[in-house]
Length: 215
Image: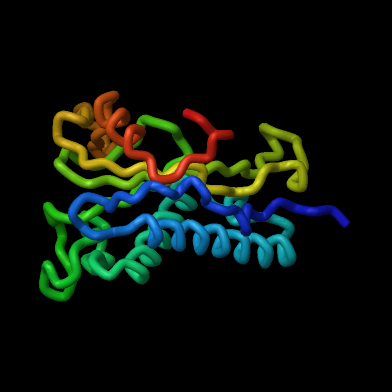
């Protein structure tokens, strides 16, 4: 029977040994470790069911941005569940994703200045946001090997499994971003990219790192 790599379900996060908290918000490394384990179990369970039904995995079905968005929402919800100080921002598309418990009515704010923003990405740098801002940011970098038969003929069983390979966290300032507007007639959403100074801050404060996926 052919074995398909769904996800590194039982990966141990032994690199999570640094005893710091995320800013002054009380989010602890133990809570992050639990969420990393739950994230892998979540993707593993989904992929196991999908492979049985249609012979594909979640990362094979969804567009990359959609998969990343789903992953980000799951991580926010699980961190909210395990943290005693932070909760999910209940405002639709509110920012940041995690805010202090009871800091805002109904734990909902369209745009708050205190909290932790969560970002998931396949990339080792070049992360983007909507605006340059002063914010605590956590980046969950992941590796996936989606099945693309037209570009890469390797069969599904030859592809590597999904796994989070790096977790970074740092307090960024507006000067750590580069704003990117849009030209006349463009419908592209304006974005801001983290520049070298911001990337250096994040890399200097890593929480988990798989050495096999060095940036």
